[in-house]
Amino acid sequence: MNFSKILIAVDNSTCAEKAAQAGYELAKTFGAEVALVNIIEPVPATMNQDLTLAPVFLETYDNSDANSHILLKEIEKRHGNGIKTTYLSVVDNAAHGIIDQSDEWGSDLIVIGTYGRGGLYHFLMGSVAEHVARKSACPVLIIPNKAEI
Image (cartoon, rainbow, N blue to C red; front, side, top):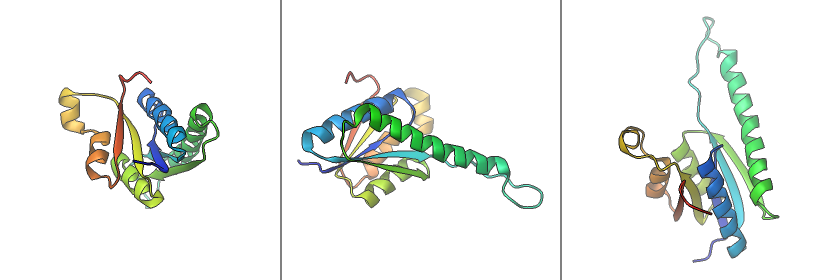
């Protein structure tokens, strides 16, 4: 297999950091370009009495978008080593957003970290990485949080 476009899903967690490190190492090995994707989970909108969106919601979105861009730049700075990197940041739920961005960008591989939670939490919440692996049109490399990179 040869990968030319590797999408790395990241958030502000240690498991995402491990996924970014692994994804960039693969990109270097294959001479691939990278897209870093950060999904901004939608905040439930609240309405004021005059039926306008509450300013808190708009402020939260603006801050999340700005913070997302800062996060992507920091990850590239730590792991990019000159590898061509595209930033993707959208408001969506995590699994759906990752799959959509992968399809739109045309990735050959998705690299994603997992928290490795089990038991009741996993039963109730499911796993974003698991959902992405089931629904993705391309291969998915899941990096466990326990992995030594």
